[in-house]
Every structure is written in C-alpha cells, then in structure tokens.
Image 1 (cartoon, rainbow, N blue to C red):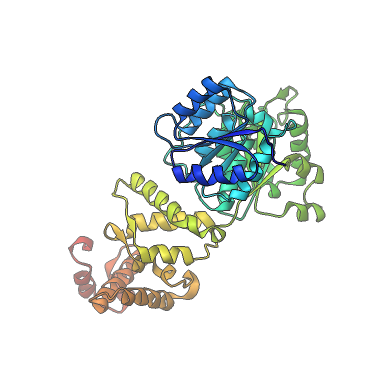
Image 2 (tube, helix red, strand yellow):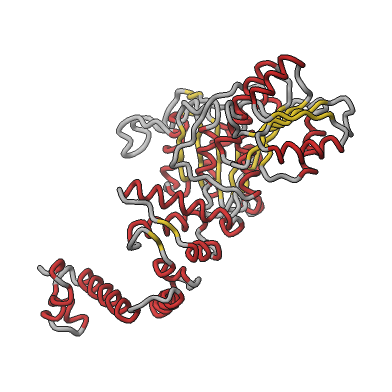
Length: 470
C-alpha cells in the first residue's frame, strides 16, 4: 500500500538514476527528494529532519554510500536505508549489512522491484535476522586481491546479499553445490565478515581423513588414548574456539561421529578422546557438501537431526556453467594471482579465447578454470593468450578424446587465426613433446630414448639442441 505521508530520499550522483527511481516512487504515492552527494543529504537531515526511507548509491564523490549509511544510522538508528551499487561484491554487500542497511539493491534493478522494496521497508518490521544486522556498527573492510569469490550474475548477487546478512548472525550454515564451485570461499567470507573475524578460521575436509582418525582430528585426544598417541592433541573444535569451523564434505562423515558432532552443536561441549575433562567451546560451524543430504538421510547414512541442526540456513552455489558471464572476470583474477606467484607479467586473454571460455561447460567448475589459468600463466608464450594455447578446450574437444583429436583441435584453432608456418610449428612441437616424453620415460638416457623412438643417438642429440645435450 502506498504511504501518502512517507518521505523517501534518493542519494546518487547519477542524475538519470535519481530521475527514473524518483518517478517510479512518486507514481506509487511517495514524496521523493533527490541528492547528488552525501554532504547535501546530511545537510538536509540536520535542517529538515530524517525521511522515512533512504536509497543511496555506494560510489559517489566525497563520502561514499557506506560512510553516509554510518552517519545516518548514528543519527537515526531506526531509519531504513537501501544501499545501491553496480559493483556487487562481498565487500560492498557485507559492509552495507554490517553498517545496518535494510537491503542491498544491485544495479541495474527493476523499478517495480525497487518500489516493492520501499513498501516492505516502510511498515514496521518484526524482529528478524535483518533487524539484528541493522543494529550492528559499521567497520571498514577491504577485500584482498586474492579474494576470488566474485561474480555479477543474479545468482551471485543473491549469494553476496545472503553472506552479508548471515555473517552477523550466529547461525549454522550449510553450503551446497557441485565440486569445485567454491564452497570454502563462502565459508571464509562468512567468517571474515563476522564478529568472529579476529578469531581462528579452521577448515577440515572430512572425506580426506581416515574414519579411524577423524574423531581425534575433530575433538582431540589425550596422551595414551590409543596406540601411537604419545602426547595430547588439540582437535579442530578447540583450535576454532571463538571462531569458525568449516567442515567440508560433511556427507562423508561416519554415522558414529555424527552423534558426537550433534552433541557439540547442541551443547557446545565435548570430551577429548580418552579424556575426562569436559571441554567447552564457542564455535560457529559452516558445513558443506556436494551430495544430497536428504537422500543420505533416506538411505540411513546421515542423521536427520544432524541435518536439521546444520541446515539452519542453506546457501546454494551455482555451477560455473550457469553463470558464464562471470568467467572472464574470474579468469582475469586467476591469471593475475598466478602472475604474482610466478613473478611474471599478467597475461591477457584475447577476445576469441574469452568466447571459448564462455562456451565451455566447466564440469570441474571454478576449480577447473583456476587450473587452466595457472597452466596458461606458466606455459603460454607471449603476453597475450590465443586460442591455440587452450589446446583441446579450443573447440570443446575433451582431453580424453585422444592425441589426434587434441592435435586436430589445435590445428583448427591455428587455421582460424590464419597462422603462418603451421606445418613447421606443428612438427617442432610434436618432436619436442616426443623427445621430452621419451627422455623422461628412459630416466634421461639418450641412447634408450633414441631406441624407443626409432632414431639414432646422434640424431636425437642433434634435434634436442645444446640445452638438452649431456
């Protein structure tokens, strides 16, 4: 319902945004004022009093939207503020919610959605997670360049908003998604943006630890608890006290340990293996899985009560094939990270390469893209990455399709680029691969390698060149 006496302010240095949003809100029955910067809005606040709702952009000359949010909430703690930005990432969304924003609105947005959001923000709201977030104080935070949980698709924007809200709430979170989608990055973001950020973040892949050792890894053990236990071991729960414990592949946890985990989640206390001292901890648990836990429950392999305890809030990560527009940005981040580690210049992706990357289905998700970028950073010649450097990915040929298919894919890519000297280049590459592989298989013995290739030793030595002669 429109609020005839509700006043809404729009603070944005983009005149067109102010105009179209103000027009839509006025048509809905609201009184609207616009300001092009935070200073003008704050001056109006002191001169005229607070409005009923504020929409503010993040990036503006002078004080940005998050600084304005902090000042508005300091002056009027109950004032609902909607933060808008075309640059959606964890830093902006979490900073907005941590500062008390009512909602985060990604640009470009649907005007009907904005009007509906105004209607929801203006009536009195019941206590909820949102209310808890609104009363927290603003704290500056800068995401490091190694933060690779990025994306600008609707699914990722929704994920960032959820992380921003949940970071402040002491709730268990279950992160689901295919292998390689970045579930640990979500857990780290929840920890980093939470009041627990100065305490430990501890990660454990339950599928990577043998079942007989997993209990000790989680809860620790006393000296003499079992054969080989020569001294006390502090488990992951104690290590994470005050912070966050990330349990990856929780679906692989043995049933016998699920009971112990359930008690810790419910009571916050446990005994070390072989111990009598009751250990109390304050740990937020974020669990992750690529499996359907409901099916595991139906199969009798996972406790239903544990699922309910872990699944207070669920965050679903989309596979990379469902957010192809994020691929170029992710690839650039990975290439930059690889260049820093390798001490080299950051390689650029050509337009045809970007098209190939967008078209790929990425069965290995973000991890597959990361691995590809590291290989390209280390092996691709020159500063610009061409289609030929992608190998089988150039035409979508699977790596398991045989070396002839891989060679054909490479040739097609080079021909599409009108490459010159293709035959000589192909023969040189083929010989180099054959010679290097034969030498590796023969332990570096040139005579044996030459015999395997059907060549004379002198021929192999000559073709290897000075750098490989011994």
